[in-house]
Length: 132
Figure (cartoon, rainbow, N blue to C red):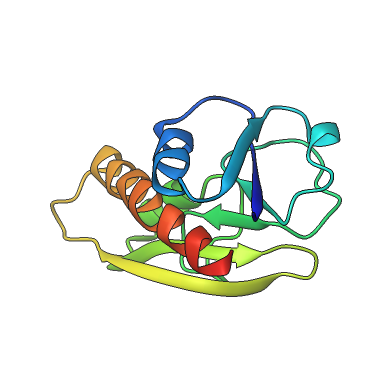
C-alpha cells in the first residue's frame, strides 16, 4: 500500500479533503518534518519550515510569476487579469500542474483567495492520487 505524508504548520480543510479522497492509501498528517521518513510521497499543505526532500507543494500563482511570500496580494496589486494555482515538485522545482482563474475588474482580494483555496481543496487530492 502506498503511503502519503501530509506536512503542515496549521490545520486547513485541505488536509481533510486529501485524507477523505485517498481512502485506498495510507495517509498521515504531521506538523513536524522529522516524522515523514519512509513515505512514498510528501505533500506540503502549508508547512513553513525547512524542506529537505523532494515533495509536492502548492503556490497561489501561475509560476514562475509572483514567487514571493504573498503571491495573491502581488497579483492583485499588479492588476493581472489571470492568476491561478500551481502544483509542483520541490528540490529541484518542477511544475506538475497549473489551473488558471480569471480576475475581473470587480474581483476582490478575498474572493481570489477563497477561489484559490477551493481549487487547492478540489484539485490537490486528485493530483496526489494520480501521482501515487
